[in-house]
Length: 96
Image (cartoon, rainbow, N blue to C red; front, side, top):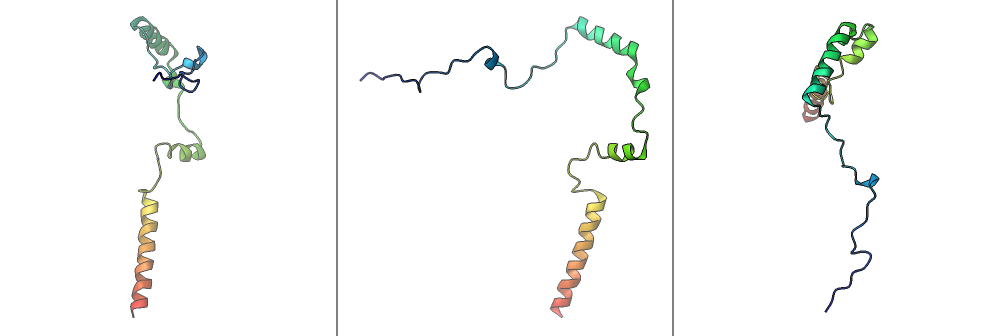
């Protein structure tokens, strides 16, 4: 018995725009391009103008840059200890 092909069996035809990779291409430079980029950065010296946050608000905000969730921060741990202490007191009061 011969199999019939239907439109559902056919592979979809993609246009050139739709055939892009699922993730962006890596940024690759030739050795000459890398040397040019390095010399450009050396001339511009961006590290001399980069001073970081200056105001207390900016410093407070930038201090949280590396925080992912805060579950293990000292403040949260102290709150958890305080809650456990209170729960133990309530449990002891209920036992008596």
